[in-house]
Image 1 (tube, rainbow, N blue to C red):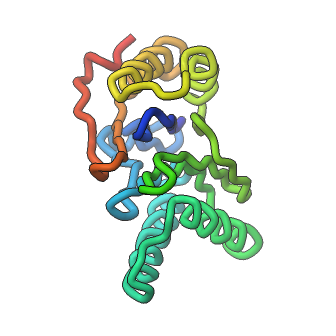
Image 2: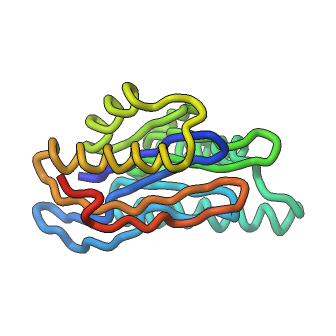
Image 3: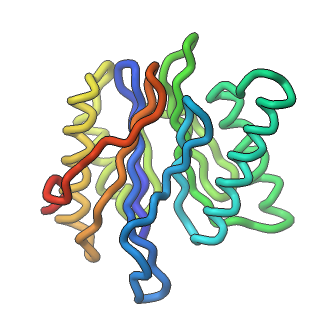
Length: 199
C-alpha cells in the first residue's frame, strides 16, 4: 500500500512518500517518514517491508558516512546509486530485502538527478518515477504533465496533483505525504497542509 514518487526539475529534485505503515489490514501508524537524508545533498525514499526498509536504508546511510570519513569526500549521486544497486543485488541471493527505492541528489557539476531502484537490483536514471500502488496513478499523470526545466513551484504543484489523484482513484484513500526537496542549498522538507492532499 506504499506510495513513493520522485521528479527532477530545474535545479532541484523532489521526492514524496506516504506516511502510513500497515500490517495486514491494520494501519499501525500515520506519521512515518520513509525518506532518509543520506548526506547534505542526497535523499533516499524507501518503501516495502518496514523492517527491511529501515535496516537497509540506514545501512546505506552509515556506510556512505564511513566512506566520507575514510576518503575525505562524499559519493556523488551517480556513485551512491551504483553502491545502493550493488548492495541490494548482493543481498538478493543471501538475505533478500523487499526495498524499492528512489534516490534523488544534487551535484555541483551535474545538477539534480533521480535514480529508480527496485528490490531485484534494477536501476535506472530517470526524470520521474515511482513505486507502489500510487505510482500506477502518478506515473501516468507525470508522463502527461512533467516537462523539462519545471520551476520548483511548478514541481510542487504537480506533486500536489499527484497526491489528489492517488487519494481520488486508489481504493484505500486518505493518504498523507511527506515531500522533500534537494537542490544547491541542500535538503529540506516542504510543509504541506493535509488539505492539499485531499480528493
